[in-house]
Image 1 (cartoon, rainbow over the protein chains, first blue to last red):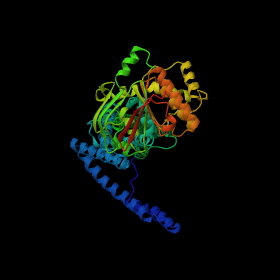
Image 2: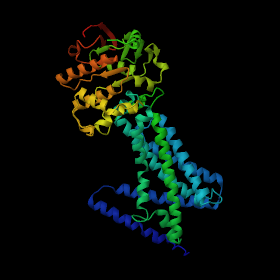
Image 3: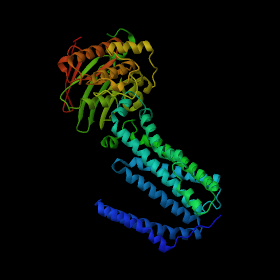
Image 4: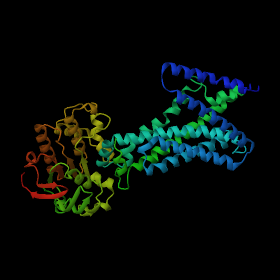
Length: 266
Length: 229
């Protein structure tokens, strides 16, 4: 295994010349995005520097509670992001389904990855736990977000079809079936596409990082396959749970479409 | 029209009884009885609560207060899905599901967990509603009138006890309207079904109904028993 080439701070600073070039170009073309580009570059730098210090601290101090707090913060941030993306179409009964599906799906997949596939010891070793949890939670967040959004917009835009089925005597499950099916497919589609193109269309970030760090490609792909299976499993469980439990929330106990949903008709 | 004893027994108890039924500021019905095995026309100005009344009978809407009895039994006691399988409702705008004409005809029975009708029955109903289309045709391609006939044929195939039709002829020409009135009343009479139909065409429907229920501003304005047929 070769050591990685250290980037000197001075040379790293030269990297910002690319951003300056970009700013110059935007200025010349009057595209008016200077502020966003500057802010994005500064935020990226500040956030990564902070993360670097936090991880250095966390890695040197291997404690269960620190790992778990970071895990909880990641989950909370992901759930909050899903809520934020749904904006007005989120009604209270859906919140618990989203949060529950996220927690159950990601925890199950993460536990399987750590205990069964990689057999990390101790299981809370932050060097493994945190990046893997990040990848699993991040992908599941996207899946859940797409799945629940598609379920909600599908139902709200075709309420006539949903109610039409109920009026004929369909159970809510039967009436919602086409919407659930469509939402599930939409939710898992990004990760399916990702797996399809993996290694050919693009080299995944984790694998690239490991190769740069001097790990043999054949070892790096083993990790990549394992993590993709973990992510695939987590996305599937979370999207399945959120769509299967989520559709019920669109109905009340009389098998009628809830008033909140009727009010949000598209 | 009630020739067998079972139908006679069913006819003695009203299909629906409503007592002090209120829903928001849309509907306020002190008392209303709707006879079984009869044709009832619900008329009145638009926005008066006619559709809400049908939705309450089909339990798509739960009233804020009051009692609704279905053949003497409180609807509260009946599973809403089971009730809807006996009391099917057809909306003003026909709902067409993705798929062929045949799939759309059979979906009612499939959704309601009823036995699918045999091919001859499907063909017969197509002829009866005057839907001259291939069973394999894409239902989405049908015209407005054809979609309405398809939706009507779908609920007729379900053979449920009560049919609630919400202005089935709203978007149709007069000729088709007469055809639909003929068709549904004849169908319900020969099978002793209860038909409750909202219509804007009170005159056109005269002679077809046994009972006229006029709803105005959410209240029952008039109940008239006719012997038009």
